[in-house]
Image 1 (spheres, rainbow, N blue to C red):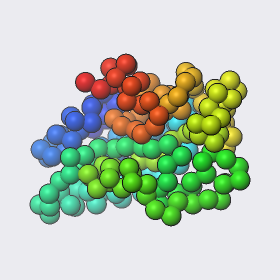
Image 2: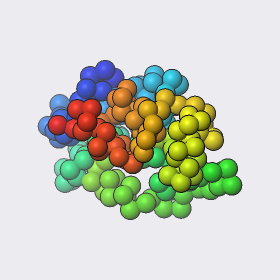
Image 3: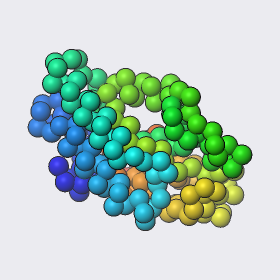
Length: 188
């Protein structure tokens, strides 16, 4: 799968292609990683992304499928969450300098459930300083305290929007992502 085909494929289509054997989780992960790697330097949507971990996790999902184990409803579908969401072993800064050394101890419930459903975690996406409390200031300044400026159309969920506008993947979790995705025709 090439990264441009990946960008135009819905989560449901990816799930069905993987379940049918037309695509492997690894092929989808490689396309996702290539697209993230190409777009992220310009849009700064991902603040924590590890290609090798994504590919390793995808290979494990392929092994699970090959073993005949039951597949979850999101088997192999890539997803990302904002850096405000706790993920075990990854920075959990709340986008605040005093928490720069904070590391997630466990997956937030939503992350654990997405993984349990077979979702492929691709990384943490950018958020305004202190999350929602200082959203207006960050919109005005158009900057993130750790990660620098990003494309930002403004409003809640603005930090997720750049990645959705450029479609690095079929899913992400952030404020108002579903509403914005529906408005832009990404959810059918």
